[in-house]
Image (cartoon, rainbow, N blue to C red; front, side, top):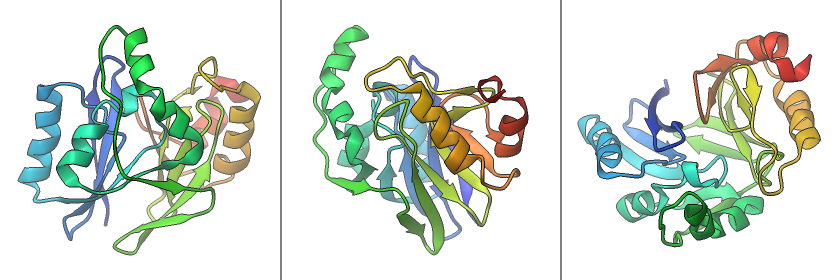
Length: 212
């Protein structure tokens, strides 16, 4: 049975997640830790639970989701999984930092590109990948059908959707992707977003104002 631990980090109140199981194997998703206190929160949780990080996953590469990426790669020495369309977003990290008023070095990590329809496994627990661009060109969602939950990044939020006024954003593309790929899933599917509270597919289909 998978467990999910969330952390709220950095200036954007970004949700970083750790997925783990009874075997103590784990994935780190969207490491947004940007200071020593936030990094220690992750380290303490991993240490106290005896977890072994086997993969680092990115839902997308906007700055608030990757502030701790270099630390994570250097610490756990496992590949970073992201969609190839967001590689250019990751490569723009230095410039993004300057826009927010702080200095950040370019990220140097080993990457594995994930694609629509691929399946990643954590000790037999399967996660199907959906490519849902519109917030960023390479935004992906990781969906576990058996336990009925997904990690949606900034694609879908409680009562909202991701911004589409950023680089290569596209409102119509995002709405279409959510409607045709996510809203066809079980209504009970929990949605763990990149910001804010968890929600469900059924709730968003009924109440999300962007789909009225």
